[in-house]
Image (tube, rainbow, N blue to C red):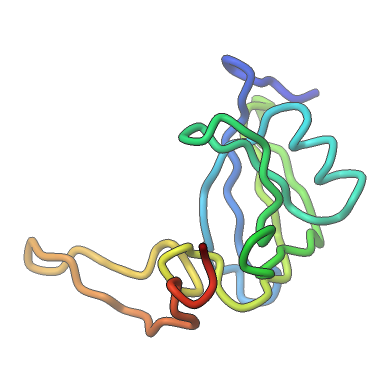
Length: 119
């Protein structure tokens, strides 16, 4: 059913209510299993080389409301209820900037201050 390329599957996560894309990440088989069995989003961190529960440090968990799989079985779409912000930089979405006239422009306000949440 799921095609884990090199052990990972691409995952797009969006808000269940307004469908705004909050983040993208990867899952390995363990992360997918934990997500399915706990109802909370788990991912695989390529940079840290470990499994992580979204919100494990910040408390900004993602309650999974729906999981979709693409036609090839190599990508997932999670609809979640996001507590506070999804972005580790303090924004609701990791997509808090857009390119405008060749420059990055912030289009969202911070939801939290990262230095107050992360060690």
